[in-house]
Structure formats: C-alpha cells, structure tokens
Image 1 (tube, rainbow, N blue to C red):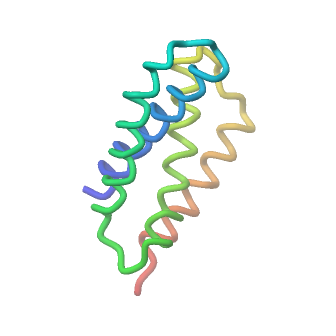
Image 2: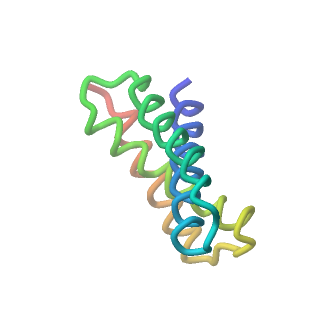
Image 3: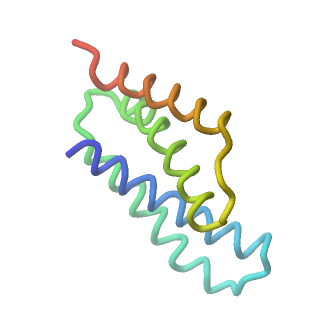
Length: 105
C-alpha cells in the first residue's frame, strides 16, 4: 500500500508543479493553476497516509519515488528520454529509499 501511495503522491505533485510551470514558462492560461493547486493539495494529503512514526522519514523515502516518477513524466509527457546518468541516479535514489523504508526499527 505504501508504494501505491508514494506513486500517487508523486503523480499529484508532478502534475501540480507542471501546471504552474506551464502557466509561468509556457504561457498557458491562469486557469491551469486551479487543477495545479488541487493536485498539490492531493499530494500533501496522500503523504499523510504513509504509516511512519516520523514525517521526515516518510518524506525522505518519498524522494526516491519522486525522482523516478519525474523522469517517467519527462519521458512520457515532455517526450525527452532519460539518459544513462538519469537512470543510474534514479536507481541509486530508489536503493536509498528502500533502505529508509525497510530498515529494521
């Protein structure tokens, strides 16, 4: 369940940030901010569903998922393929997130 929440949170955060990016950088309508803000609210709410005794730990582990999701967004939405350094960096981040989540406590 945690992986699904992290994945949904990443998609919500990226969509929200992309809406603001589109408005500021691509000249899209100010109305793009409405779904953008809603997406960012959904992102914050989703992270509260993570079962963790410390918010910082939940956010740190989420970082690895966010990086991978951002590269997937770049590839699928922006049509820019990640290079080998993007992929290597993302793999390292996922390993780090897994250590944080799976560590025996």
